[in-house]
Length: 93
Image (cartoon, rainbow, N blue to C red):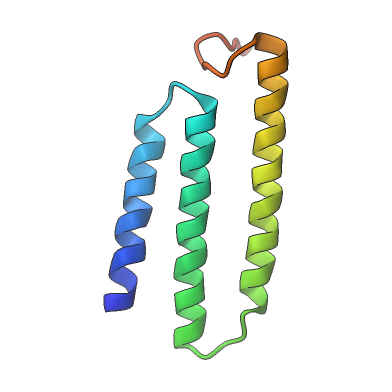
């Protein structure tokens, strides 16, 4: 149970940072990446406890890298069109 306490606490802190930082897109993307990293850490611990192979964790890392690249492309597109990454300046319509 000791192995699960640190990743769970860090995951909850990452969720709290994601919910509380809603002003800039970059800070939200960083907190999402932190949450994904903690999920990977928990998955790695789980797979090592059951003596499974780490093939699924490599697939998870691949998809998380793709998610990070998509988030950065959205950030660059938003900065080019609006000039900043504030959510207040970005209109849905």
